[in-house]
Amino acid sequence: MFNNQHCTHPLILGQMNNCIGAANLKSFILFLCYTWVGSALALIIFGCNYFLCRDESCEFEGVLIQLVRVMTVICIGSILFVSSMLANVTFGVMTGSGTIDR
Image (tube, rainbow, N blue to C red; front, side, top):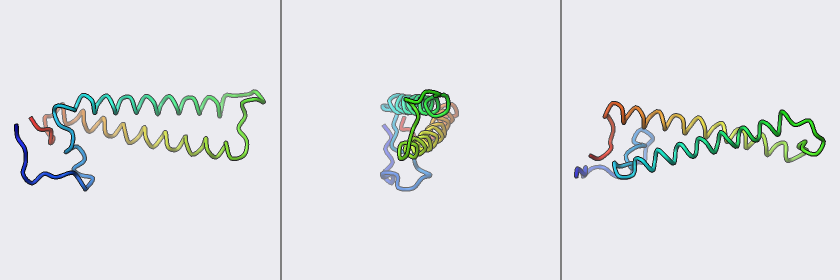
């Protein structure tokens, strides 16, 4: 098993995948997929309740409107971040370039 003596915990953004090894790559990919699905589902639920609801009982008022907007922005941000991480991991697996210990 190869272990680089100069490799430490990644402190800069360019070394983000250094903590993912061959033993836990599957768990990391599953975590990314579950996070993406959960964020997309929350975004769909917020969108349906915010845009498609015509009842008086499900309209948002006051502070709740701001919370829904903030959660929508957080969901969109997490979907974008997780999508970029999934693309990065997929590229590393497909090309064989990366820092995964073999």
